[in-house]
Length: 266
Image (cartoon, rainbow, N blue to C red; front, side, top):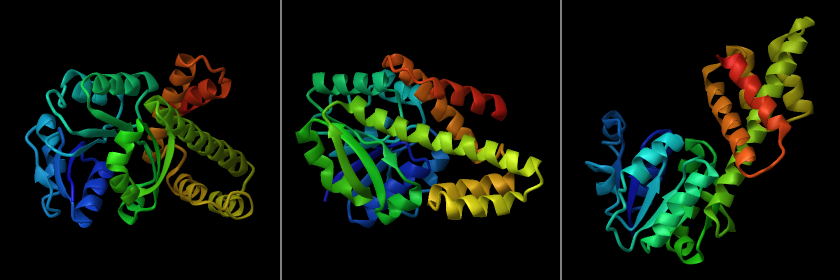
């Protein structure tokens, strides 16, 4: 069994740590908020005093919120400095340039690096039914494949870590588009006198019988178009819009979506 480190113990990082612990691995974890570490006290996780201490492992997963957090912890903090024989797996949804920068730093240091952003919720991770878009050198992927597969299906995108993050962002773009179209469609139906929940029931039965539409349709119907859970899609849309510009991709819908979600959630 492997010793596995975690940098970031939010909802997703905690679920991943619980999953590997349940399978018999040893896990050590760090989070900037100590409350997150304390919440794992019943799991068998070994608390780490710092991100660098969490890197004393065979495989280290970083599960960080955004570019700012990843840059502060992984680039400025340099927790992997001096480590040998370790593979870093980034699960964070961060920009293509940043994940490439992190990958290049690991390559220069002779360390393994894999980008593996994940599609799924914490419950999916615990059940081993998530989907991971994975990219990195073959040897690095092989070194952690068994652990990755414990979370769900592994789809290898290629060797460029940026490609995996682009796949994740493209998926998030589709989800954000679905959420915004649901909001606008529901507003239209309601303005003409239709019942919100009845409308959601119709479209999630006749048109989009998927768990995503059912979940967020029900959320918008019951909590309103500005439900707090929708905030993350505004961030996703902004990141997709920026990435499209960075990669020279013409994506007018991405810009419009970012503006629409930003304006209505302010």
